[in-house]
Image 1: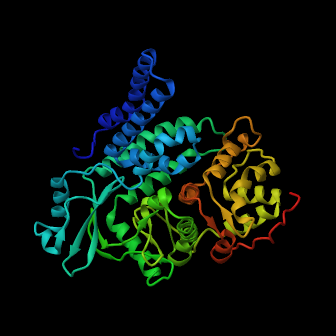
Image 2: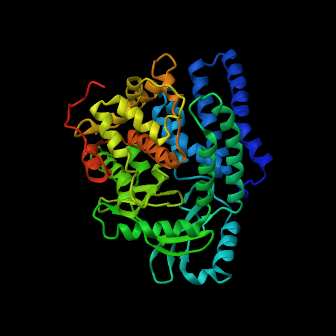
Image 3: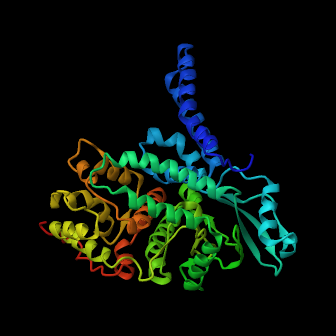
Length: 445
């Protein structure tokens, strides 16, 4: 692989190659069918080749394009099985790996940030990366004091590529937003641009990681590696051993799935409660179960600063929704900006639309599954269902952008894990203002 493609025309051409490549393979498949090859065999070959090209293109582009691919890899849990199977392995691979940058580029970044004698900081440094992500890759090394470390190095040109991708995405989003009467897209795009710009600042990421590490020092449930050294494009952290969630998703035992799911859901609320920060990159490559059965967390480039914990309005709104007070839910969402002035919504229809998102907290235990998530997507995305129109009338306040992204992505991960969690217990302990009604209680609306 060459260095990260930086020019917009190059990146746009690569992105365009995915649908064009699929069209070419479809024509090839048609030819094979005429030659007598069974249709289902041809279809499987086409899907496998398209999945491989998707990984190659998104992985090489990295930046915003690869982040799109990582989002797909989370939500593949909602796709119908006949569509999901050929893509699952390839998309999941995007969650914690991508084609590496050349060794010469790695050394160039280290030399620029740590000086020409950068090797003196290490007892050893492995030139081969152990993981690759959207804007950086990770190498293993031994620090001068003997500690095993992870060295995260940003791709040269990642900043220009990421912001260029965002500009392309913004153009599409602004057009699409015209079809959604309740959505104010401008503030959302501004917030997204600000948060992505933060991800490029490794000094800021190191501070966020240190805040998490201090908050969870010697915690019995969570392990966060300490920051050893950092610069503008490099972060050196203590090495964190563990079994990645992606591996538990693929072959974990029921007990492993339950343990990982419980801790994963708990960390969503424990981060804001204990550190005043929400970890905002929920894909499985950033989490692992350590040998002492804690949840290890890495990669703190995307965070949401919540110094007072989760917004105080969420707990009471969840409580009100579970009680069945439809009008109060509508009034609360309108006050927060989720329903813009002038948008007419039936309160009970809104509550019905939100029901799947409240369901995990109606009982002491809830099992997340791919089938359940597919049902949720059908509930809100099927044009034949009366709930479909509700989604088009809802707005996303920019201050809730990352919270919405994190919880949506995390539900996808939980459904891939397929574990059983004690969600009410977590909410009661960590969500401000939550006072969940007794199990089985549901008001008349």
